[in-house]
Length: 334
Length: 240
Image (cartoon, rainbow over all chains, first blue to last red; front, side, top):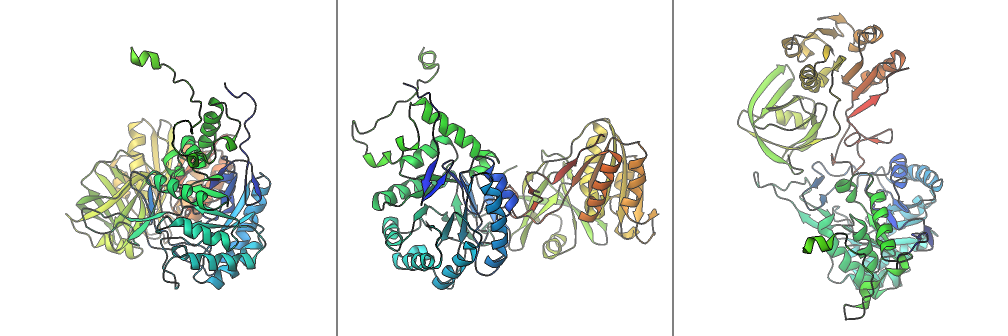
């Protein structure tokens, strides 16, 4: 049975309706309003701006990002013009995106709980649909000493402070580099988070064989792309088993099938970043088309039919699917 | 070439002028003129450089900051790390081509000139710099046997003034189908305007501060375009 009607790919995240389930991940194409608009035109339901901090940051020296063969590794060091400067860019971006019906997610980070609140209040003036609270960047040394995402208490404290500082819904971005991501998710949920982005990049390192030197100037960096997908799927599965919050499932989504897997693991919608390098600037529209085809070939109607299926377990009879015939399989047997 | 930096060895280090050298590496790169590579010196920095020649691979480096200082300190036999090539390149075909280079913009145009000649194009070049001592690649272009127009701001060689002063009347002469240019932003801006006035198609190579080099970080944005991925060569339409 094939589904013939139109497929509805819109979805809800923290009270915001997105026209498509694809979210441009933070850090891709910076905070330039024109570049965010360009990304929005390729099929995004929402785009996330580069993380901004209370004060301007130059970021790390080069090399800052390397395509190492199974994804990217980067240590940009959160270069950004600072919240006060960025708010004007975000306002421009929000205006451009509103005309396209695409949501703006403003990403913020800070060194202290108080500064998280202050930064949230500043960027709220730009009117983003959501604020993404980045407590999990692996590439900055903060006065806090470690990522806020490393402990349930610190993650909850930031969440509470941000929630008290803005009326805009907040999604908290978690790190895979923790012992028990479900416990962090429970803490931010209890502190009032409206959603979760999972996951940030995983710390890693490239070493140049010839010189023996770390390739990234920062030494270590965050792994994204293909290598991150199994880690992201595990985290999204564990988080959605633990809390009822909507999750932007992010990490290694390069194809429509990857997006299906992420939704199956329980994601409300799907973040895309490194795919821009591996598949080019139209990665989002390619992924969206592949997702549509995947759904229609199986007779499904929309995202609700595939979301959360990994939680049904792998027992016989628990998996319901309707794979399309593989063209030419008889020939390959002959 | 790979996306991760590869250590290549310097087989020659050519002094081009008082502040500029060309690094010649033990490698042949499949690249188009106008493309660039990221050059890395561990512990120093990684910077984008246009390809001055693909076989052997060559980069021309003027001393302007800490990275180029370190590159100038390299000797024959030393390694330098390269990833690339990245970006679009110039189009290569027959026709009547005018090449305009400001400062070290002459280097990638030399690679282009050789490819254009192989493709049967008629090529003329205009090179500009502050003084005759700053002019680059005059003899290399001369060695290709093509007409070379020089401009120096102090008048010590060629026409007194900027390269744009030399190029403007040439573009108006109707002798050229296409302008290829590489140089400082102000020069490119003037040439873009002149291309529009004279309806000569232009392909202008821009410089930008780059980080990733592969179109993801957005650091090199220029008018909604990414210099590393959409450029560094940007077209100005010709025709009426």
